[in-house]
Image (cartoon, rainbow, N blue to C red):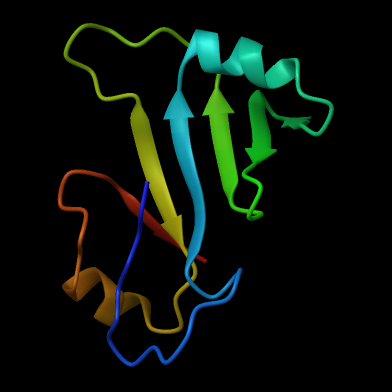
Amino acid sequence: MELTYNYGVKHYKLGNDFVALTVKSTKAFAAAGLLEEHKDHAGIRTVHSPDGYAFRIINGDVSEGEDPVLAVTLHVSDLERSLGMDPFPFFPIQGC
């Protein structure tokens, strides 16, 4: 997955852009449990990419036609402005 937005951003560093992708999948949840570096909290298993980006996995089956991507979480300084430039019209965006 590649996430790019360029309005007023001179450079990217971990933590000032993409925070996490949240998906629902029983297979991914089980596979993530095999990794040494994972955290479980309130039914959500979190793993990190080699670059440090978080992927939150909720244990659950996805119905036919249901999108397994539940949320894209971005770190933004101006939530209203960012929502106005929504690059993900089909996913809920969470600002933090």
